[in-house]
Length: 208
Length: 209
Image (cartoon, rainbow over all chains, first blue to last red; front, side, top):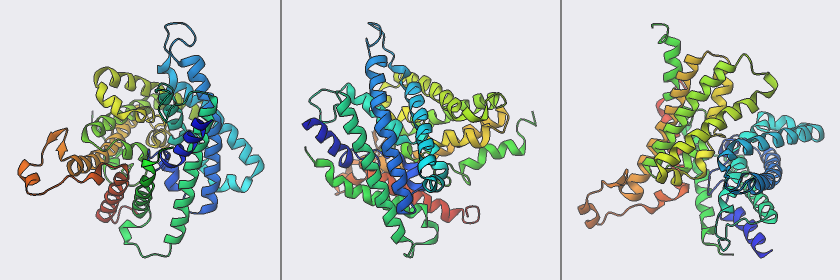
């Protein structure tokens, strides 16, 4: 239980998807123009993470890992194809749910909803999970069961949500500032994210 | 022969290198561009891997474009890309193991690199194999160019080395020069990419709206 909480907190602050690993940058930069849409995308990403990481964990443990199906057979090299298939399927499902229950959010997310499938944060979380399964159990990043996988997925999702809502809020304010012409839009957004990442680095010594 | 290098084909190859650069203008494939650039060598390996994968996935999808049903095209594209990435990842592990360890999950993340999906959707689904191949190579190299610029700046100022060799002479250190530890940190890559975009837009004022 302790390990789950520590994993959860670490993946929000220390191993933040955006600020420590730059995963999911494309949609992060493109959809962070206003807070409401950003929140919607953040929740969608968190939900998809919450489903795909445990499913991929099960795949990794019972199908792909060394000696999982047949003794002496290691199918780890198939991970990319299987993980991406799970993710694409899940995103399809989320898309249908969002369209059914919140058509306005569906319209404002537009193309970025199906693009969650190619959001690096989702695939990245599964690949990091695969890496962490093989770590020493004493390591703070170790994932050793479904509980850990869920805690990790939820933490990563919330970390991403926090980052995108924060950036959207800053960008809403920044509309009123005087930025040099060629730096406007993307350039300044990058520098803002860089400064936010510097701020988040103060968590890197956190020991839980 | 002249048809192979017509103006259109040339444009497919050259425009992504500068005016339509996938990273600086279209802002695609940022994730890996930021994470692997603390040194020059992994940046170059990553740039080349992406170039090869973009080129060949473009060719394959372009050959299949008339047979893929429209509704499931994303899945088909993802599977083609994932298969190519698996091959490249195994090759990297076999021949440049140390770099492949440094790149860690970012090799796998080429699958979700938006440049690939963007080119497949926007170009390979409408064009023949040869222009698609050139387009893939052009976009891959445009991406690699940005990676190399960022990797160069970060390694030079962060470690004082290039490709692992010392380039800042010893007397500079004795005179009080110090490596800038900030450059090694991930946050600085964001700021450097921001500055690259700034310079690129200031230089190409008319082309970029």
